[in-house]
Length: 234
Ligand SMILES: Cc1cc2nc3c(=O)[nH]c(=O)nc-3n(C[C@H](O)[C@H](O)[C@H](O)COP(=O)(O)OP(=O)(O)OC[C@H]3O[C@@H](n4cnc5c(N)ncnc54)[C@H](O)[C@@H]3O)c2cc1C
Ligand code: FES
Image (cartoon, rainbow, N blue to C red):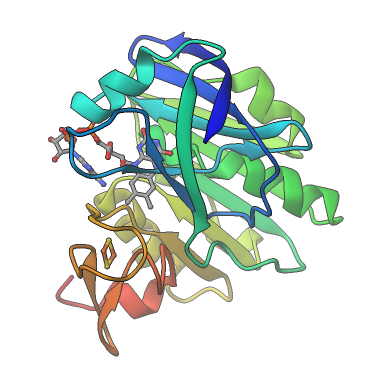
């Protein structure tokens, strides 16, 4: 069990929670969170927003019972943090763009922080419906931050400017990006957020169609090369 260090609203329905402990987190991984006894039955998958010597942080949106219970936690309360799980984004060298939409921006903070600390130029493109989240924090971990509110963040990026693009957000946003990347040398990695059951490869709830057959988003992903998951039919 970890202890909640902080759990603060950063905007309406969006919270930033920090839990104590030492975690060996890779960029783009997630944890299964649980702060209740019996119901809901399943823990909830939430991406790693940040990780440091003090603990691990999560940026989450309240959408249902599990996240409502998380939002009620106060400093000193206990929380079960299982993980980190999943493969995460690759640690590449080159010019990198990170593109996030909505709560899909969550895994991109730690990803930008780590990739930039490794000496890579990192540009961040974040799209929101009506209000930017944690803009000043994101600015600190990249070379250039572009925020799009109410429009299409995919309009703001020229994929030909980058060697690697990593993205997380609505399926349609990632698919548009995949179409835009075609014909350039940029390699696109997408983080899928399928609904999950166990989070550790045992239940098949998170199954996702790829060009090499069905894969488990929790164990084989959540990060895939875009060409694996975006075929002409999907
Ligand atoms: C790998 C991974 C990483 C994620 N990272 C984050 C994160 O960093 N921050 C965050 O806020 N959320 C994240 N999610 C989504 C988060 O897990 C769900 O929002 C959460 O489980 C909902 O739980 P609930 O009990 O509050 O709502 P529920 O009552 O379970 O669901 C409420 C509503 O949310 C929808 N929903 C539930 N799960 C998902 C999902 N995976 N994708 C789209 N819609 C969903 C349901 O269809 C329903 O309409 C992630 C999901 C995955 C698989
Ligand atoms: S969530 Fe159970 S196999 Fe992926």
